[in-house]
Structures are given as structure tokens and as C-alpha cells.
Image (tube, rainbow, N blue to C red; front, side):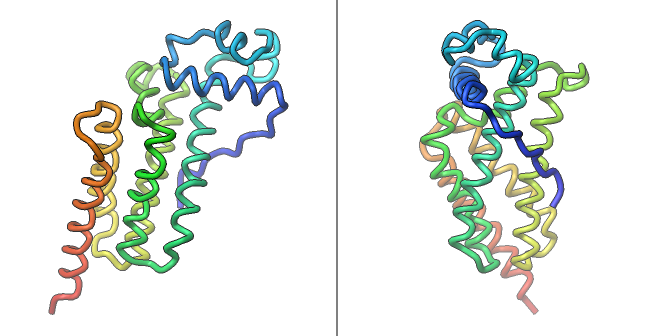
Length: 203
């Protein structure tokens, strides 16, 4: 599987407070709206400590995104361990994990998508874009791997369809367009997967 996340270095207690404060503030208010003064004050540290631990605001933003990504992956892995046998239910476990994750952790939608919306066109050297792209590539790879394990025909094509459902549900959560979008996405995903399974078994 490609697009693995870089491991975060162990954090000192002060760095942990900075990252925790930044994570809440960036997610709730937006990256551009929150300055290092506010983060340092909320964390109960000096600006010097913040810069000593992270070097720059951009590096802190990347740590925020990577920390959330690591937490999501751990949550997903924990759920998939409960469905160890390859098959449709294991693939749908991604949607189950998203359902149990989103209310507590992502009421405003995906932190990666939100961060991407705040930066430029992705060609200005901002490190946020490749980080977000890496996270989304990993998610697509995970769908494809589970589809291959389950013996789904054209697993890469199916992974792209499932990814669209997953990403659409994330955006719908943030926009509050309608209730329980991941449940709807899961239902559509099941129909797609069962159709592919039936097609593969037909004479």
C-alpha cells in the first residue's frame, strides 16, 4: 500500500499542548484565521516555545493534519479488525468507521478538505497540498486493497466509485445538506459492491 504517513516524532508536554490547542483552533476557526499568538496563549506557552518545538506555523499545520490522519487511521484499523474476513462487509467497514468517527471528530467535515480549501492552487509551494493529496491517495489505496481482497472485479475502478461516495459524504457532513450522509453512502456502496459480486459470479 502506498502513501504511508510519515511518523510523528514524540512530543514534549509543551509541544503536545501546542498541537492540541492548534488542532482545536484550526479545525473550528480555520487555519488562516488563527495566529500563533492565539495558539500560544491557548496552550499556555510562549511564542518562542511554539517556534522552538515546531519551527513555523506551516510546520504546525502539517503536524495538525498528520495527527488527525493518524488518529483516523487508528480508528479505521480498530474497526476493520472486527471484520477480519475479506468481503463486502469489510469494505463497508470504512463507511462504518466514518459514521462512528464523524460526529465526535469531524462535525465540520474533513480537516484535509477544509485545509485544502484555504490554500492556493497547489502549485505555490505550500506544503499543505501534497500532505492532503497524500492522505486522499492513501484512502483510495485502502479502498482498492480491500476490493482486491474481496475479489471484486476491476477493484481500482470500484475503489474510485467508493471514494467518490466517501468524499461526497464527508462534504455533506460539513455542509449539513441532509442528515446521516455516510449511512446513505454506505447503502449505495453496498448496492455497487453486490452488483459487482453478482456480475463476477454470473456464468
